[in-house]
Image (cartoon, rainbow, N blue to C red; front, top):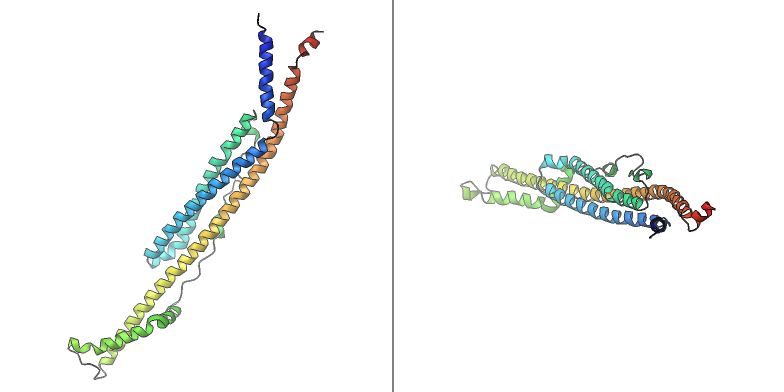
Length: 268
């Protein structure tokens, strides 16, 4: 007759030896590899999210009016907060399941691991590190740049307009009555040039600031993600060390109890 008890003991010993191999200390390397892959994935997602945000900002800067350009800093900070929240959720979704799997493979309850992303549970707060934009260019600077680049042309436009007044049935440069009209045309052209230059300067200023803000936000997000993942690796690794040691002691004790000859010695 087959000895079913002996077969069960041998099967149990085989299971315990297999568990003993998993409890040999390789969990640290698995945790490190898992969190490294999580970091690579999150870094790529941060780059994608900020690149999309950068394209939206460029479109906004090119098309928005004065009021829309004034709102850009507030809009950018709000968008960065949304990116941060999404990355925080992705961090939890990507980092925690592999740690639970590593613990479960070693028969360690996931409740024994400190699986919080940060001890404080706070937000990254990456938008707080974004620099403030420079103040917009004043009218004097715009006038100076307009004069350097196109102001003389504006005055020439006024003079040429005065020369062309006979086409409209008005006297040419023959009397002082024409000069105020010519001066007005020149001033109007100069004002239009100054306004266009000021708008261009404002768009360029916001474009430079947005690029700098996104670069600062990206560096802050990546640095904070690295810090949190390192903190999680250290805490989860230390907790799993203790849990694995306890589980290994239990497995060793059961293996000793099921060692061949134990039942015979107990019978004697």
